[in-house]
Image (cartoon, rainbow, N blue to C red):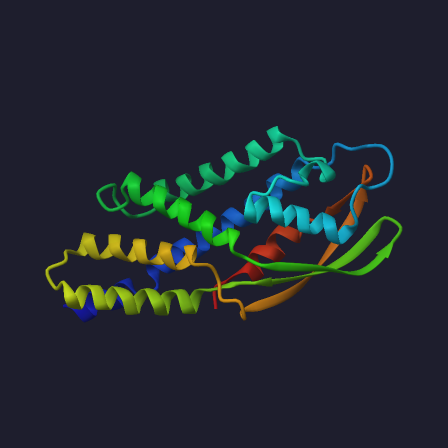
Length: 225
């Protein structure tokens, strides 16, 4: 009974969280990009590589220090933060888990875990080329590995259930959510890195990443392999 239950749950909890994290990251990058074309005179305040780093600082680390250099205002930042929260809560509402399992406390903890984990992503941006109004940069970023998260989650939940065989199905799912959230909050391993090339275009004297930026970054930062 225990083995079958754990096989049924294998990967499901981690997959839901990882896929939602990827979607949240992509939407967050789009939201930031949509509010950063307000400066219209003079030369760009930042280089292409610094611009890409500021985008990532805002989205991943909630670092607002240099957001004005890409034309981002406090209102833009608040819009970005609210969209992140609304998206995550919307995913919870449409999930198959009932309210007895996915309690408000668990949802809040998962939200905090995802935010904490994203803030622990490390990245390095280096220039590739610049030609008038276009530029290319490389973003080297470490990433979450779905396979490792699931393996760790399964090992820990198996140990929990073995030690507490009277756990109900709902309790097992809740504990799996807790463990998966904690795995993300711990951040990715330092040696799991990927490099992606990003194209930028100068618009209204601000370097703006192209439309593939959010998908490229979210795809490498959160690997489903």
